[in-house]
Image (tube, rainbow, N blue to C red; front, side, top):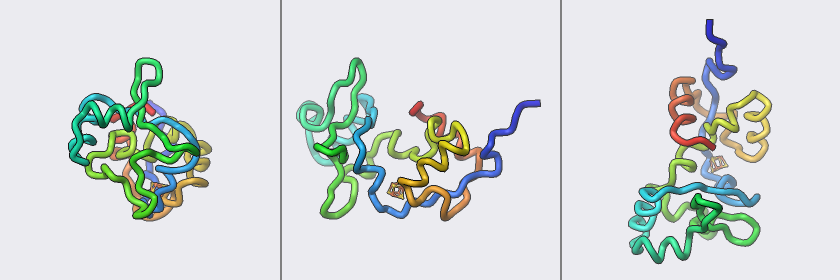
Length: 138
Ligand code: SF4
């Protein structure tokens, strides 16, 4: 019999909109061509200038640029909102249900320290968690 996932009964998560996952510690937000096009369109820019301004090359992959300190370049600190929210990339859409965060109960508890939505609010079913986890490998 297959082992049950440690989160087979689901996990609580509800975003508070605090913006902490868009700011702070440096990291990567991996983006593909379709996502770059969608984000550029969302703020009425041509793809090429959007890439030059907001996308950096890391090896052969592309990631959103960060401000000094690590804040996402598309995060608007004044309104505490994402400038491309409706067109945000898969990595942002599927937070916090990334495979790296779901590895163990401990890894899940660790991200709860930085994300107040983790462990509170609505219960998300394990089937939904798995489908989000499998959208992109992070
Ligand atoms: S850190 Fe968590 S609660 Fe805050 S905006 Fe990000 S997902 Fe939402």
